[in-house]
Image (cartoon, rainbow, N blue to C red):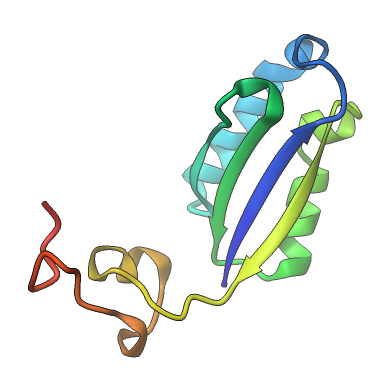
Length: 114
């Protein structure tokens, strides 16, 4: 399973600033563990951020979001959307842990990434 975690500020972005260093440590920890594949701020940044997570069930990802320093401080909240990949680009299949039956050839031919 994949999970799209959308972080939304509950306060002005400036009010979250005192918690940024702790939030970054939280992100780095879960990236090193392999749970977070991608994370970043939205554009515009005052909306919050998004994370793509893998390798854990829904209950675990909800526990992880509750541990985010932004959430613990009450300055942000998450919306979690769980995704069951139906089709996957060949370049991502192994990384996402998706079965070969769901891999679809890329339009560039042969599954090459250019």
